[in-house]
Amino acid sequence: MTRRSETDQAPTGMARLREVALLFLRLGCTAFGGPAAHVGIMEDEIVRRRGWVSREQFLDLLGAVNLIPGPNSTEMAIHIGFLRAGWPGLVAAGCAFILPAAVLVTAMAWVYIEFSGLPHFDGLLYGMKPVVIAIIAQALWRLGRTAMRTRLLALVAVLGAVAGAFGLGTLTVLIGGGLAVGLAAALRQRPAKCLKPVVAMLLVAGCILAIAYGLAPGGSSAGGEFGMGALFLYFLKIGSVLYGTGYVLLAFLQTDLVPAWVTDRQLADAMAVGQVTPGPLFTTATFIGYLKGYHYDHWGLVGGLTGAAVATVAIFLPAFLYVAVSGLIVPRLKKSPVAKAFLEGVTVTALALMVVVTWKLGREAIADVPTAVLALGSLVFLLMWRVNSAWLILGGAAAGLGLVAAGIGP
Image 1 (tube, rainbow, N blue to C red):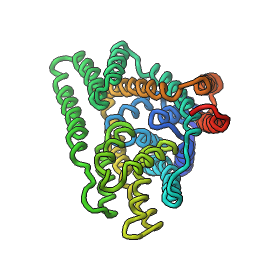
Image 2: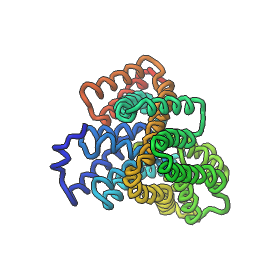
Image 3: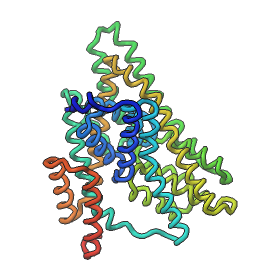
Image 4: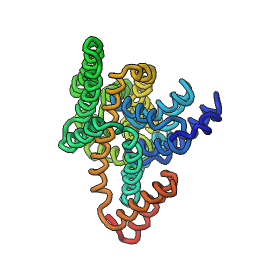
């Protein structure tokens, strides 16, 4: 429940902008674990602790970001910044959330080149992963109780989870869930009034699927000779059409960049750096941009920094533009019962797919007694004492390092 007293007394103007920037800068430094974990952390900070938006509003944003390409958790940050502090907040929240990861990844890329490799992160990941699973689980529990208000929504969520478990495309499942709930809402209206919203809903769904499955597969190859312009255009195109998780990003990069720009080993190391650092996984582009820029026309460090900046701006720029447009459209869609139902169907299906992803990740992360204790202990701390998730992640990282140093774990 939103704490209205805090919201009513909230600061305005520059004070709101400052608190948005500071919060997302902190989350950018501590939000490990990928998009699902980031959503859980944001729900804890923004809905439960600060009451900036209600849980219903948060769910609306979750449904909206799942319908547009790009990094979902970054788009959530941008949306929330817009709601809290207007257009300046939109820019500040997104930049603050991206910046720490981009800086850290750039530094690690420098280490990678200077010392011909990176240290192993087994201990960090060993301790952090079970904590991240606990954070996602408690967020899904809270959001699911709010989202599944009817039997139809619960049924769509179950069917979405089954479809996701059998490997059906993420966007196909999301659109299917939205259409099912939207059509049910349309059929409850008089026949004369339902035709127009149904046609509009089908057209929107068709356009989204056309963008995802039409432009993305054949329109993103890097090819040709490397240059800063080519680097910018490639990652701009990726950021414009990419739906799905960081693993979808890996598939794109594997197809397009190997061996034209990077080797298999370099790409694997870039993805590992993206996973072990906080913030969005799309900063994998930062790492690749640094590597290519460093060797571009013998520019060295200057070229590396330039390449990192160019790739980062290019891959994240579409997210700001998409959110700016959808942030104006979503409130209007909520005025239509059919459009509102469509968005609710997308939202519950997105939560169901997050459950499937969490289950798969959990089977890998919770593999022995120490990781099970870390996951269960984190869940208890979250539910009973509402400990800040950032502290739990840092504690899990420290515990993982200690366990691996003691010869326990991988």
